[in-house]
Length: 256
Length: 198
Image (tube, rainbow over all chains, first blue to last red; front, side, top):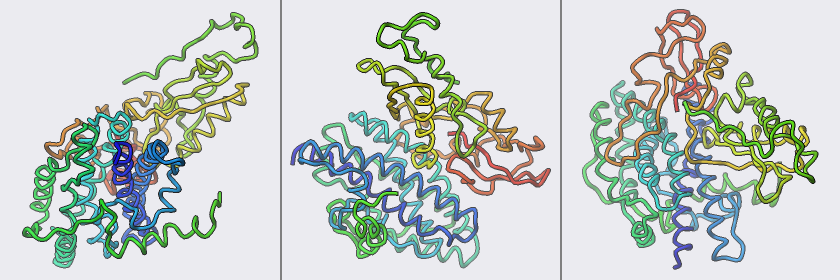
């Protein structure tokens, strides 16, 4: 695998997680528990979608260096199948109830902010620029999702039980966030990728601090699911893509 | 506050342009025209008052192409495409043959770039302007410190844009657009949007 092929794959990872999570958050529009949170979920999704566009556009520009025709952001988003997506398994998990969505968002946001801050120091100037901009947005996201974890955890018996169950159910998808594969290791060596192993401790510290305020317990060490980075996804991604991609696939080349 | 870069004049105003570019408008005049382009979602403030217009200059390799440099606000802001189209239309309306809009991500946009006039107009419009100034968050991976990044946890409560009271309360981190939070005033009881410090 050439350096450009590694970089392309890495950029898909950076772009696919926010893209897929944005699609999930979009599913909430019109279904939020209160109007303010309906709007907030959509706005977080919008930030993530904007970030995904920047990553995928860059990926397409890198792809053209080793393939005769690079794909643009739309082709990458709408015309790849599940096995070609590189997002975290966490991002594709279903919305469930508001506690499930909140737990998923918080576990992701805390990792995402740390990742983006680390990437702001990337040796690749384009990556550093996108990351520095996105990190400012992620800082708002982790604050909001953390507040909701506390509000639900330290709320009623029912809200506490629901957010604890959500955390317990999603915990097994957090391991791959901190496990680099050979592509990532090569790019870490080259000073381009962030070393996600270094994010595990500050992530856990923040999660524990919020869980403490929320009267929640982090699950015991458990078997961690992995596969997003090589395209081995849970069954949920295919269903999500079917809805996300149906229009451009059914009406190829359609324009507003 | 960081002022937007002053437009560079390729030839002094009032002095005849080099031959071949006689019909090319002056950069200073173009800056003024483009500076009037409003934010479509908050039409009382312009692209200059928001701090997103970063440069207006002629392409050094193609003297009839105007290069407009813009630093967008939030990544997913749907107003960005409209703003780009409005800038293009304004320049072409002023007699520019070709316009190229370049997006500059770094340094990232910050509300510190918003002008004091822009802040005043926001308040008059009923939107609390961003409080004070803020720098970009430190590039650290050692800890997540949410204090200081948030409209929720900043020491001084936001002042109500209607009655000026600081007896106010955050309702939601997001308001009607990505750049705003939703607050309410406990004194005059009116809800209001707060343009988040970013």
